[in-house]
Image (spheres, rainbow over the protein chains, first blue to last red):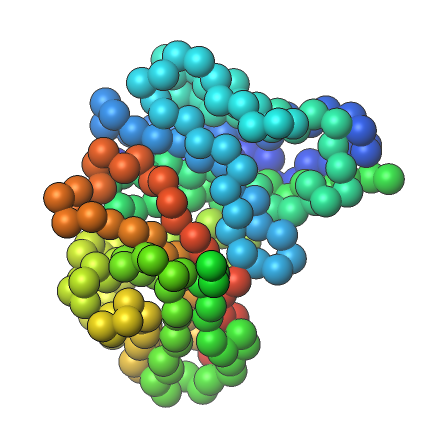
Length: 112
Length: 122
């Protein structure tokens, strides 16, 4: 079984501040990958960051970084120096084979 | 390099009707996956097509069917529409080499999503 849970339906952050979005997952796989995708009003899913579960080191992409706690099955996304363009729905996801499993999303508002 | 194009962008259908949604894959990609995203939910996997054959299916009834064409574009067909079929339908293309058909060693790399078709069933 593969489940992804996002418990924060909505979050807000002041421009230039830092925000953390939470995600937990459950999997029976030993080798898996985790993702954060961004879905702006244009509706296209855009990859933010990818984490390989066998790697201890947390992935980073510019202002975006993750805190991957494998034992706790937790995978949070930290956005530093938030910008107005970061406002969007954020989905945590995992992949098994060729199938993505998405959480229910967190709507992020950036306050000017 | 062109991205993934979906058509139409919006569509309204009546319960019981049939609908066809279209997806043009990104240049160089040979695989198309379809997802259903209901309001307030994350996308759910419907199925994937690789080299014109279905290559994995999620928990969707047979009235959801698909095609992939030699140019790797794809169609999603839904028969006997129900109100609960109202959703955003996303497609995603990727490149799959024959020897890694299982995807296990690709780890989700190289997927490009389209902007979806918003289907409303009334």
